[in-house]
Image: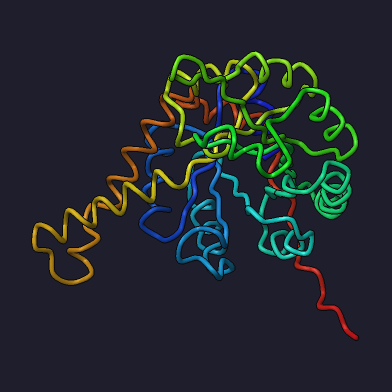
Length: 296
């Protein structure tokens, strides 16, 4: 995952980290990446609807990755408990999205350091977060937590002390005259300060042109889950409205709908056709066995 994102960062495109919750979504995402010859990140999380237990899903993701002819890696999104990193590593992931951004900066740094210490020796990249991730909320909602949009100095402070391989940041909104725009100058300064791939989370609130601008300012990984689930849900609703009976008829077309949206994202984000060059310069994930169970 580190090699994949490094290549995207150096060459000015972004890899999609697509959230998968079941086999239909997984197959649709992989089929899109195969067709577009694009590198891909598969993302799993207990926070996704219906995925309280993700170990079986991790095995399915790994199996599909082994079958694919394009570069595939997968990440596990966890919250602020470093113990979750151990479980993610045992699933064989290549990346951990660790989110302690709701903590004060020194505590966020200390917690992230623990996760990097666990993951780095095994070649697992850690995606850290600093500052709140905005998804279209009003500024006052962002400020209410006590942490605002990411600043370049705090981003550098965090990266220098944690050793994360990718930084998820927020892009602050500027409101004037009843309209909103995003502070891309801040994103550019963060990129200059940290010099590592940036991650965009909560991407559903941005237009394609805004995403392209962020990629130009260092965004190399884009998390994309809620829109895929919305598309799948819409397809199911349409099937039911049309009188579908039984499970197969109810979910018919979900895979194809997910595939089309994934293909669109891959095209917009610039990763289409990059598979061969990424395969040439990426190392395979290290093989490692889960740690032995602790005994008391």
